[in-house]
Image (cartoon, rainbow, N blue to C red; front, side, top):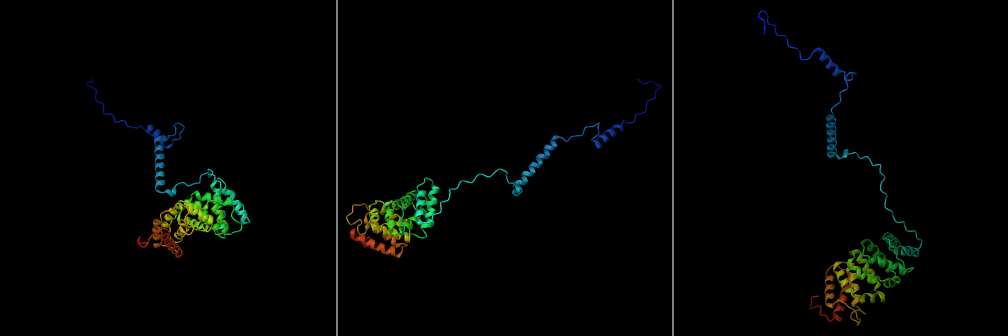
Length: 308
């Protein structure tokens, strides 16, 4: 308790929050972070991570919005090896050597070798067909095998070469003996228009031989195949199909007593008449008119009553 004669002490002034010495030490620590008494302050890890994340996000957005800014520095990895190309065919100096080289490559199991042989024959035989020397039977059999393969690219070359070879009379019998006439009849429906037109032209040339005409007449698929092709083609293709039908039904053909299977004369006459109504060459129209007369005479048809 306070004594009676003791006076109360005045209130002491408030103590400052920071003393001068404490403020001086804090100031020194901030202004001189490398002081030996204080360790340098490190930035919080969260600041670096946030900055890195912000930078990464900014870069990825920039790359997405502006693809041309993407780093396109070529890779140092070696490029993949190019596929091996077949060796080029040796240079031939004569047509006989060309035939020999092509025959060897057509007998190969490699499709690339066969294609090289066909390209060689196209360059040599197609521009300047020659009858000397005659095409070797082995080479012709190789061409027939390629035609039966029913490949679009192969058929394009084979039909060109076969037509060029058949322009020489001596090669037509070789082609028939190698099975070219049967192959054309059996593959005509699956060939493209340009290829089937060349194939039918070659077949018509083969029919100028007795063996070729007999082969065509004896084949059961000849008439159905020619009727189908005649409806699909126009111009020269239609002309060739009518010419081959004329071989079947012409002199020595279906109405001469040969035991062969052919389509009914009425159906063939109707197909020929429809073909003549469309686009056809002048030669095709003459052949068609003659064929209709033949069908009327030997088939005992009255085409005028059928509206033909």
